[in-house]
Image (cartoon, rainbow, N blue to C red; front, side, top):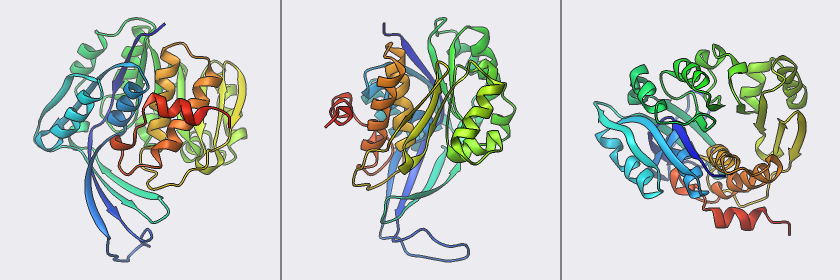
Length: 298
């Protein structure tokens, strides 16, 4: 049964520099190209979910220079009625991508850090009990939103990126699902080995679903009390920016329509792999047909 998927998240103007290799500390290098793309973890995940077939609405904030991101969201089918474009300064990300597709990113939240608690309350008033809310840590109001969502009976998913004090202050027991990469998992658990780290978090929060993306090593999840794993799908990577967001958005869309965890995780894995084959963040979020094709056994 399909329902509306709600996103409270960031919109970022991504300024992308292509470099031969990522610079060492103190060095100066020359980029081969410089481009601007629509991005932000919230916007990326909203588009990924919409392209996977979900009905999506989003709360966010940007400035006039980020209006093109809102247009991209609307073109993907996302309800943008709760996205303000009146801030003086849009959020932006400085992104470097090397010849192997690996990236290094610095974000300046700016407008994203000025989402108010009242905005969150109005947005969540439009969500029905039992529907799914996705959040990340690139915006203000994370603690308030998680608490209000819990009060309203929403299934709250937290993509704990970037890791920070706001994430550590959250009662993970109020979440439905925690989504992290291996670095964020280690920061939350104090353990570097993913299986052991998941086990530690699961002992503390036994009903919390936990999904961990491991890059080239695939993914591991503890869902419905069971551990499941998947291998990465080999693709020719052009740009890994947005791969994790494609995974999260697709997974949320498929779970919101009632797909079992195993099938949803397999397709989310395919979505993340496809995102690596296209430059940019929002431009790389794949369509459902491509995800289904790559997810099929060969």
